Image 1: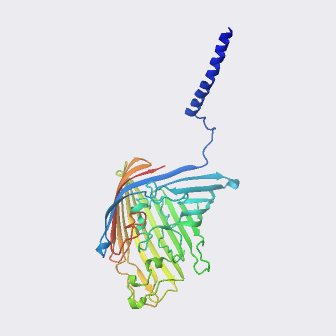
Image 2: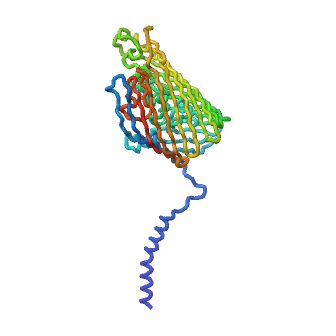
Length: 433
């Protein structure tokens, strides 16, 4: 009997670690359920959007500056982020978001929260007031409406290659400025922003933003700041929007006219080699847009349009330098969805504008216009996943330098010589979560 008891005890000792291991395995395969009503205090979201792209540039006045076809994998504004709200006193919420570029092609990897990111206070009744780094209201006037870009305002197919741009190799940008780093674009992600976004009242809403004068120089002679606003009516099949933006000491004409006025038709005698170093500048733009979705037996057709004026001005420049440059532009968009298939198209046109020179010298802007075409097809594998084929071309007049506003080969985007015509075709996949 004693032997039996010893054996039983030994068996129990050996069985204990096996039972513990089994329990651990059970815990691993079936984790404890979260308490009822529990949820994460934030949402993880993102868009992964890559395309295999072939681009080239032909038609330059100097044939040596043409660019033969080259390929790349473009990340097309891919991003990942977290956002959420937290209830506090008085019916208010803390609103927060941290969005980061997802450079999953391994090129231009950068730090966290480098895209639309903010923290602020908001409520469904009073709207949201926040600080951060965010697209200006002007840039985002049509985002998410029936007047939106059929090509998602990303990559080389972006409508901002012509609209929001005065030409002169302008690309979309952040707000880091001074006469040495001018901001030419009106498609700005605004750092040091103070912004207010209203609620929507029967389809009506508005947004305001101020870019703080963080980049004011030590002597105060250059004081960059920005104002931006938009108003929208978005209800059912109809969208209407208007936007306005002003850049104080953004110095857009320094980029457009880096030496003097020769690019605008002045003579060498007018410029006398004087550098274009203004004391101050005031650059502004306004636009109106509309879109309408028509549902019928053959699917859903969305038509959109936008008209824009850009006005660039600078002061205290040498005689013969450009004092102001104004140009108008417009676009028409089309999107047709039937089942899982979507056809996309856009036509854009910028006129040659007009310029005034300091001292009243003769000026001409002949040859500074451009037109742009984009066509595409998308097939939706699921509501949040699609494959697509897009093509775009910018046709510059003989002096114009409109370029790909977002992404693209660095030998073309932001480096387009006068009169050249950038074009690209890409096969891509887009997934949002």
